[in-house]
Image (cartoon, rainbow, N blue to C red; front, side, top):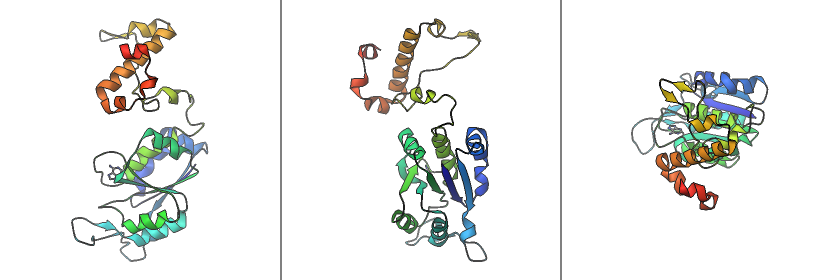
Length: 237
Ligand code: ADE
């Protein structure tokens, strides 16, 4: 997968060289290029923003540098992180992981002039994506989050791809709690059943924990869980 990121703060993206996203880059599964938007400015101050038409607080990103940047880098699937975007989900991460070329446009201030998004949408798919119902200073951190979620789904990135099947949000439920050694720590014991070796009962226990967790923490997820996927013992739980 090829990824281009356009931002006025290219240094924000150093973490993409670390850990498993960094490894995906060094093994050639992923290539990431970070571009400084100011490269596409033409005035001496390298201006990227201006006051909003219609008045109001803050500044808006001017369209010209964005237009030139996208002409130079596109086409691809343009992802614009924004608090007015569609909420990001694991399903979106799976869809993005199928694509060959992603372009991330990081807005700052009050956002990017709307014409940039409209103009790009005439030439390439554009997705405005929100991380949640809160406002960040800009799209940079959101891009790092989206890149982590997408990179771990690229074929060959995770050693054990079957761990993707059972994790939280892929099966519509939250995952059960997990434990490792030692069996007893600060007088707290690992649930006996996990040490029983009875794989059938362990699977049943995990399923029950998963349902209880989802029902108490995420009633919204539980409400949209398909009822035909609930068996008799689920209902007893
Ligand atoms: N930029 C500013 N706030 C954001 C949010 N909540 N999600 C994605 N991008 C953003």
